[in-house]
Length: 397
Ligand code: NAD
Ligand code: USQ
Image (cartoon, rainbow, N blue to C red; front, side, top):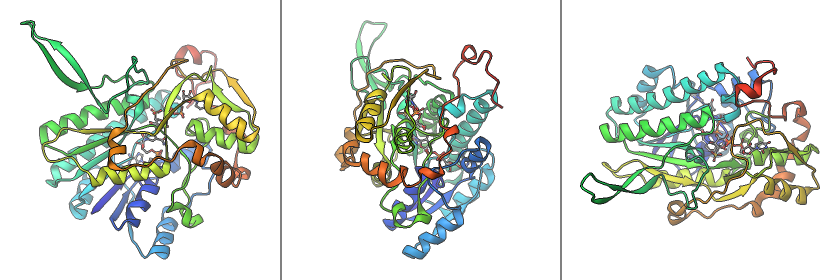
């Protein structure tokens, strides 16, 4: 099939583009390279040396003979051009990764909050509006987040998107209904993902757009089978205080001898998935599209849950790293349990990569290899969630 990968230069999008191309699909990347510009803004970069898009595409062509299309286009601002791309390319499916995805970045200042909302909400709306306008029956697969659920489980496994509720009618009759699981975002970034959900529900109901929303946990790891084939294809590895996610940060910190930065008590439980499983899940979602008329299909894209402090102690035991308990810059529950259903992907044949399989390899193969590129001053997470926390601290611009 022909697939547009929106955000195909990013951490999840690039390996997905290669994975689908390797399977024989016709892949076209759309990306405005904003993530690379944010690296410039933050004066922080990927631990791994990522190649420019032209080099990436040429290397893939040289290795496989396969072509990747590329449009440098801002989905939040350049609606007309995106509509023309859809009309020209006539894809069967698109995968939408193209959003500002870091919670700390989204909380840095009013400018960062407003950018994240403008970018993410407009990008998603423009994509849906253009799909309808194009008249094409394009399957829209979106990368959402486990964070829309708010990590609270009320003693039950979080279902895949929809919650069974019993309502009592005015006549006293008891009826079962399914509703979107109540959203409970923990940052401006996560809030934009909850708004995305409403847009999908609306365009699905009004225009019959076929949508799969993948509620993904925290992605860890760096490379996939395809990105490992040549250093010019290497994936990005974020470790800085804004974009680095917890497990990859701990792996990198262990490799450079920096005490592992556990926020608060480390009692936060989160869901995780390896990047190799991310690309496989997207493949499975594209191979199993919703039927015309079907409501938005929501899948929980995660394979295991862990408490932050348990991860730190696991890595410390493997590597001898020290664990530091640092004040939590975020406003979030200090302790939570998290149980999640992920039966839909397991039923489709996902065979998860677990932490115990891949963890040590990741430390030695990637984090240690590129440790010399690290700027340790970029490790602390300095983005504060509330005005009270920011009192007396110079404002981020
Ligand atoms: P990323 O920042 O590495 O990649 C996003 C890409 O989208 C970048 O290349 C960026 O340049 C592009 N982009 C952003 N706004 C755009 C716009 N307006 N027009 C065109 N391109 C634009 O992020 P990622 O880690 O690859 O995440 C991809 C998606 O997956 C995000 O939507 C994120 O919410 C979701 N997700 C990521 C994780 C994770 O741990 N990384 C976990 C769960 C969900
Ligand atoms: N944390 C630490 N130490 C660190 C970094 C983080 O203790 O050095 C803690 C945070 O306080 C938080 C948890 O680890 O409690 C997770 O933080 P994170 O930065 O790894 O993940 P998060 O902000 O939730 O965002 C990431 C991605 C986002 C995606 C989300 C999936 O950046 O795009 O949507 O994971 S989920 O968390 O399931 O919502």
